Length: 170
Image 1 (spheres, one colour):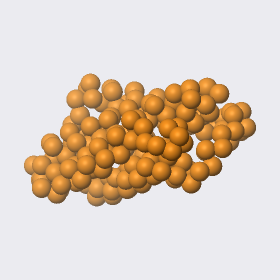
Image 2 (spheres, rainbow, N blue to C red):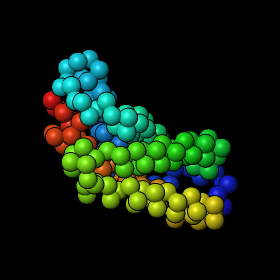
Image 3 (cartoon, rainbow, N blue to C red):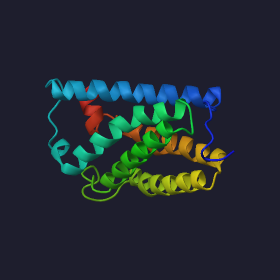
Image 4 (cartoon, one colour):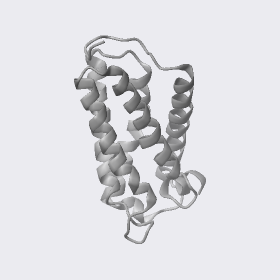
């Protein structure tokens, strides 16, 4: 099958369920946390005004539902490719901005920063697979990137000591 072949959704029911549950829960939690912060119902956090945090939040929050939409809908057409490029750009900006978010570890990197190179490498490999017509590999890489590069590190953002956790549970 080539990269230009239009394919219907071809995810297994288990992968679909994991993506819907994880992506849906994270989207809802982020919307509630941001709503509480903007309404003044959550604690004021000085680090939330850092440019890196603003850029990171501004790209990662829409990347969650957009990635879910791209992965769950029809594949291979112009819409899929355009939205996939937008999602990849959001993921790249999210990963790069994370490098500059180090207030949790007193200016140093933490274990969560390991997701930055993993995300970038995953993106490069997914793009290369699509361009080579290896759509099954492209799909596997992007499922891994969505679950392992977006949802897993995103879950850490909702820990009670982190900005999103403070805004959500605060």
